[in-house]
Length: 186
Image (cartoon, rainbow, N blue to C red; front, top):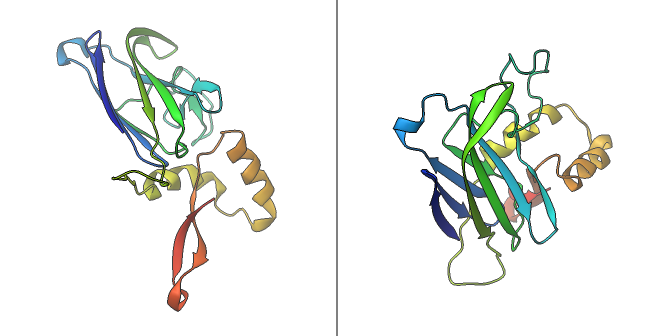
């Protein structure tokens, strides 16, 4: 599913696959001076959950002492890029993404424009066309803090996944013909 909406000069294009929603933002260059970045609030209408998506890039002056790789809400530390991938989407779920452009200072971001985009993640169960994204790069960023965790920690990982603190991670779970691994989803 693809959607593009514009409001207050902020344009957002959303492309939903089965397990990923890609968001591309556009903001007029004349309005960019002082722009801190974009915050993304996600509402999952299927599971009735709403929260700010998190990222790992922070403004050091706003949160000194945070450990590298710490997850912070994009409301407090806006995304300093014009694209974002949500790799925790679930097939068939309907989401509203509220993308907010922030100016101000790193310790006190001020919203200046926002757009709400509603999409439904594709379901592999039917339809004429399907969209699939390779989640390897994005998921590897999420999995980085988990490196070195053995199988004894699997219950903790599943708990974090269930609580939405980690998006779904691609893993090699099954073996196909000739013993070659096939991708699965944890």
